[in-house]
Length: 367
Ligand SMILES: Cc1ncc(COP(=O)(O)O)c(C=O)c1O
Image 1 (cartoon, rainbow, N blue to C red):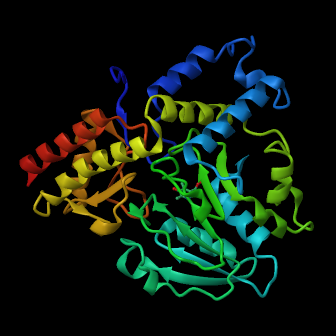
Image 2: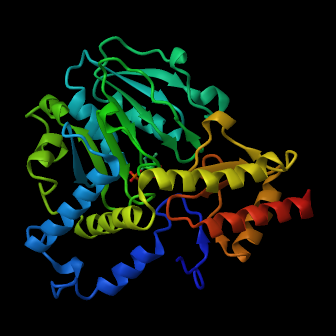
Image 3: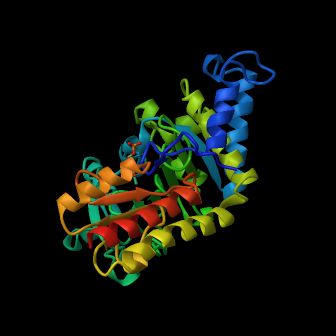
């Protein structure tokens, strides 16, 4: 049971809300991990005790995602920003090769910008003309024959756009930024070359990036790469090329345990997430234009619900009154404005119900 007595409902896009039971476990184990006698903050990353933490987090991710033998889990640092650099460095090794990037929002745009430093960039589709409010259909993509890879962002956190159906990319491996929707729904890992996600939204806390990598791609990593930026070095070292973010990995393990034991796995959490999102979208759709959703209906995110009101003054009033009601961090990203409710796995139904009720009352009073 979630007890929210002294806590607000925090709709931050990230770092974001964590399951309360995870916070409680961290608190109860902070001075001494059971059977260890030291805090997780104090143990060596080469110790047997940390082996257990790392193995536990890895195997829970494997269980949750039905990880096939063809893929492996890695824990890296540097956030998703570093992945934008490592992908072209590792997989776009010849100047003549091209990477296709599908741009459905601000994060895809950042990924594309890094590609052009290392090789040819082909923007296979860009939703900028319509303000990044949708994902493309397959027949709209301008894919390159023999591309080194194709990249997309499965959930654009700022624009609230979800790429529901993965595109067909032929032999080009699909590299996907799942920073804001990893673990939000079942996933067919075989379809991906690389998945990466900064943990601070749906998989833990800032400091660790969860990667799921197709092992055969490691053959492409060039020995001349700076060691730290070479995926194969991290793979060979089992995510311990240097001191890994031990505490962040421990928290990811606890979040996965919560997903498995309390939330019933990814199929169940996906239904829960859809139920939560549909409560908010319903308020938007039945408000007679008082609220306008940013994304087109078919491409709406179930993690980040992004909408506007008619004026900035009204939005500011909405944010102030919402915060007074214990509904916080609802301001849209500075580049887009408006309102954004991030409702990751850990956001309880009560939080979303409170926000939906607040939206209905606010519209009635001010419409
Ligand atoms: C989809 C997406 N990609 C990348 C990032 C950047 O992650 P980081 O700050 O860990 O580099 C974020 C979040 O901030 C995100 O939402």
